[in-house]
Picture 1 (cartoon, rainbow, N blue to C red):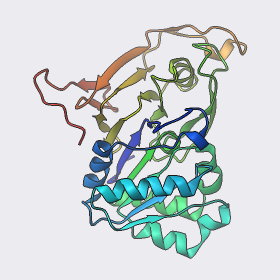
Picture 2 (picture 1 turned 135 degrees about the vertical axis):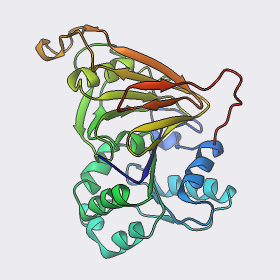
Picture 3 (picture 1 turned 30 degrees about the vertical axis):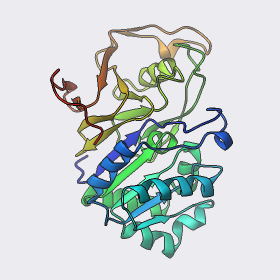
Picture 4 (picture 1 turned 45 degrees about the horizontal axis):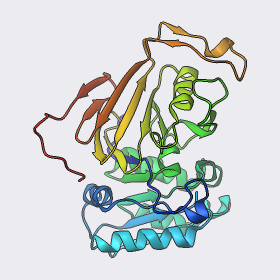
Length: 287
């Protein structure tokens, strides 16, 4: 699918407290990554719309983003908290996203985004603008995971490479050939992403560490940004994949699952499966 827009999925980053309870664990984007989002959107004068629909505490999350964007000099920041599907059909919501240069989805529960916004008029406007215009769609944690067509909706991190470790659902389909997982390193989500690509072996999986993201251009190539790493699982040349015949709880076997570990500045072509790594003497940059 040829697109003119830019996707920026981000792996999330706990600000403080207990990481498994959102009440004590607000999503916060480091200024380096956020500044790249602003730059891709056209600068500090661009209109940014934050959608905290995934969150149980939208007011707190919205304040975090308002403060963070404000530190970067952004003054045209708006919030659109969709709690019911009919709100995603309203003229006010459509008008707001129709005039934005950047849409930012917060963390929380990705299924709330798809159930409240998926297949609504708001979703259609976002998709059309992303395809035809230079719109930036960014998201952290749940806001990143919802971007794919086949979306990870949940599943165990403790069970590694066991069938049933991942639960799948329908995503927003901004990108169709990639399955995205977040908090990948800290929460040990290798097993569930491996099962996801075993279920859909024509798609690649990308696991994003915290304070790490990718900038996807044209729906085909991306650059790694941030301080951590990403893991790519490329299953397209699997020689053995027993996922379809196993019962839940059974260890899986995948042979020839191609894996890449990439970090800041590295680039990847999704169509060709080719890596271009940053030279060893190149400076580190978040933005």
